[in-house]
Length: 227
Image (cartoon, rainbow, N blue to C red; front, side, top):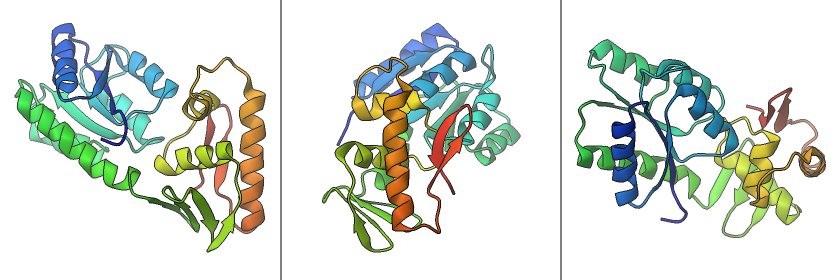
């Protein structure tokens, strides 16, 4: 694997949560348990995840509510694991944005295999050397960025911020998300650092193509690519 894989396990039953985390850790992934929809949202706002295992019957926000919220701001892989066996429930969840559906009781090896399949599918986009959005092309191997075929010069931090956005093109990034992902240390509320670098990045993108807006501000939430 090119990087550590972080998986959020949202399951209110302690025994099942521990079992799922053990299955994932045995497969070489890093797992984080969450026992309610509200707790899961807190973890999702704090950092980016490679995959989410999601139960439906949760305290606080239900799995259905959580799926709806997450899909409005992120394209993270989501596998529903639920005791609900009805076909209409499975179809509804898949149509609502789930990538896969596993019925309880589950087979340990099947869970591991389905997780691997989803990660493989998503890594095709994430690990590809070329990240593309509108007329932006970011070449991860050459560490270069071009807009409409013309190279633009970014600082190392501006490059990392842009790469973060291009790797999760539906996600809304809070200032905390950006700081912790790009600087690699805990966020202590210094918004000015993020504001300055975001402003400089947006200015350079705008200069390269004044007719296009690439990043939009979501007031009270953060930033996202403008699709």
